[in-house]
Amino acid sequence: DGGITQSPKYLFRKEGQNVTLSCEQNLNHDAMYWYRQDPGQGLRLIYYSQIVNDFQKGDIAEGYSVSREKKESFPLTVTSAQKNPTAFYLCASSMGTSGKGYEQFFGPGTRLTVL
Amino acid sequence: DQQVKQNSPSLSVQEGRISILNCDYTNSMFDYFLWYKKYPAEGPTFLISISSIKDKNEDGRFTVFLNKSAKHLSLHIVPSQPGDSAVYFCAARIHGANNLFFGTGTRLTVIP
Image 1: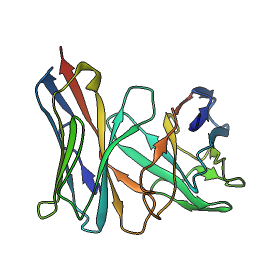
Image 2: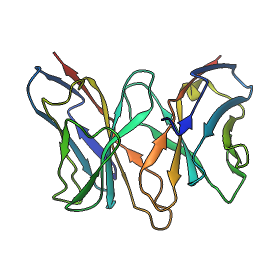
Image 3: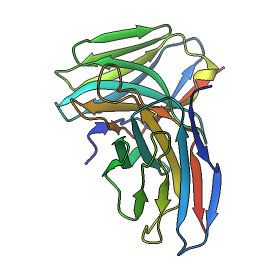
């Protein structure tokens, strides 16, 4: 079955620690994205990658870092510099800008809680 | 600055009636619009989309209307079913870009 997996579903972190959220897709999509959702707010873009070994900052990249060493994987690291890291994190992928590649497919999300 | 706005945070509709969810946008460079449905603690799932060259797109019980002059789109669900109860997000794409701009969502409750 093709899709996007995120792990873990729930994650707890002590203040001051870095944590990495996993995102894997087997849809052969070129583009991948990380969003953050807070209560009462829409999805805000953290980082996105259009191709392997390339990524761009989104609207709220401060305190986060990413890598794109493989097409299938786009891990997100929440660093201790992120002031309000408690949120629901969503990973997505899409074919890209060509053809009908606008639709993004989302993973199930990871809820991160900083204690 | 929110470029995609969903001004109604919630909507309640009786089962079998029509649900109309609204979305406004400010950026005239948007050329593609999408609606996503989201259940709690899950990722959004794609519902329906529309290109800016069209004013209507229909898929079963779901129809999206686009009024470019008013920078407004709406999602109609007919007939509404209890399983439609979820948060609906409107999203838009700038021509040539990959990333989407999302609204804040409208929580739809369909009452049996």
